Length: 208
Image: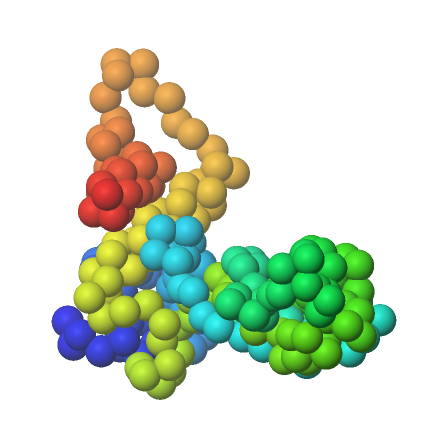
């Protein structure tokens, strides 16, 4: 394995790790393997959160703003940290708006309830800083892949499990031959569904 975090190198190592099972995935330009890695990277964020900082420019009376395209969830605001006057002070801006995430992935918006006021912008400024949970990505440029190099093996392992899950789903529509003697040519512990469970258990155990 090369150790590089570029999409091409990760695809190459995933294919090698799957051995003959890699032949099941036949989409052009290795699209199947790219998809397996993308799904795995997104799931990776549940276990290795990627926290980033963001900022939007507020306008008094406007409640909705474009969110970063890689935003998965809003974490907290940094707009008021260390700068909010106390309720007994004349410049107290009132209760801060609640922030929710609305819309579809890639086109999400930050919804403020209620909309920010003139006083809040005067006291705290129009630049609304915040921390958000971002979606992990795999990029053709290794420096833009957000999964850290030290977790490379775990990413490959999660992608192996995802491959087994897809193989198991493909097999659900195929006819099954019953063997009354209890023996068959494929051991139960070699089926994709069993391997998916084993690999996911290994993945979760490594994260613990």
